[in-house]
Image 1 (tube, chains in turn orange, yellow):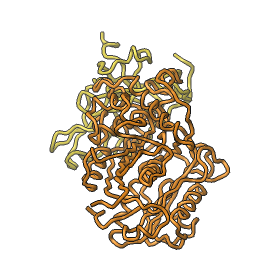
Image 2 (cartoon, one colour; image 1 turned 120 degrees about the vertical axis):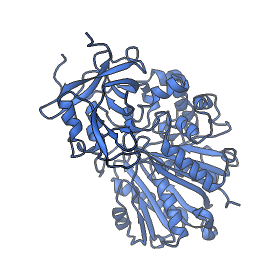
Image 3 (spheres, chains in turn purple, yellow; image 1 turned 60 degrees about the vertical axis):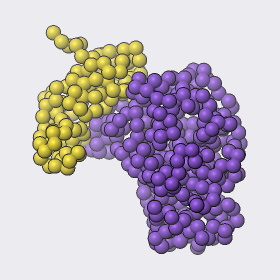
Length: 382
Length: 141
């Protein structure tokens, strides 16, 4: 219950542009997001005494921005690293290690400017026991468990396609989304096959961009120009670096561990959640997330989305920026999910959920390898 | 046989995994079993991931398994000919491993979940032989 003393997000912003940004290196994307976030919070760089990042080293980001911090966190477990940075920053601020934390993300996922490479060492376990069999990155790895889920829980190809259809409905309401034109189930199923059973429109975008957050103690919440969003609960876990070694192909142990921890920490039940984000690198992720966090029975999660319960006007608005499938996906998307949760609770989202008070934001890292989960409230917790 | 493609991304054995790759060279699929708790596990390591005991033994697995899940990659890969299946195989002894399914069409119709499979071995070079799987019964006499 470390968040009892209260930590708030007082600054949140993305890079000025999203999508295709070949004029910026990856490091500069971090800085562009950080400067926009400082402006959002009305702070100067000298006000920051804690730095966390993934993808780039926190040393590199701190030095580039001109910060000599009292606290750093370089946890880098994939796209949910930023959720985990939030959790660690809450603990650091609550225990007095630092006062004001800047968390940055920037990724030249599309343009590949100034970006270090991904390499799977031939002597690593995945290099020895997965790479020889021909996987070509996430589209052929993250997707591997889904046929099992379909057979065991009755998920249909049409329901999987509906995840992309519904998220495009949200993206249609968002001027910053990469893809906004409405699509149908037939459009999805007729799009190019990438790795059976996944079609192109069931796979995330690859774009450039960044985002950053500034966190500080809740007692300072009123000192900032924009509405401070309260961190109610946090959770984190990891399962495996190899998707072939998931304990259960139909469930992410990291999701269920991190999600349950965050909801217990926040003291909320499922009915309290007004708005939800589930990191969607591929169309099955929201289905796993809803089931692993107990919002649906495992066999009902596909139908829950297909029936429109997560769509605009539905009872559980999900991935309201359009998600990794339609909004943007730089590679480590978790920061954009957090940004959308903050916008929804500040009541300034392009596709605003009326009266949203509580948002749950679930991240994934690697291919079901890691997870971080954050529960945010518009107001302080009672 | 199709046109020879570029070599696959081949494994580099470590001291902890050497026994596995020695095994495939002599056409044995080797797993490990814990002496303390009987747990059978993969990938290799010199202790039990369930109870942490260092008292573990290598043994020859049956090579039988079933098809747990898969994808059929449609994007061109320098080491593979046409669409190919990347599979997860549930071994009879319990562990799951990634592999390829050979000896059948690389189509959803031919690749049926839970179908019985049998290990076979494909030599890559003097050091590395990869374990792959084919539908059970293909090479039965």
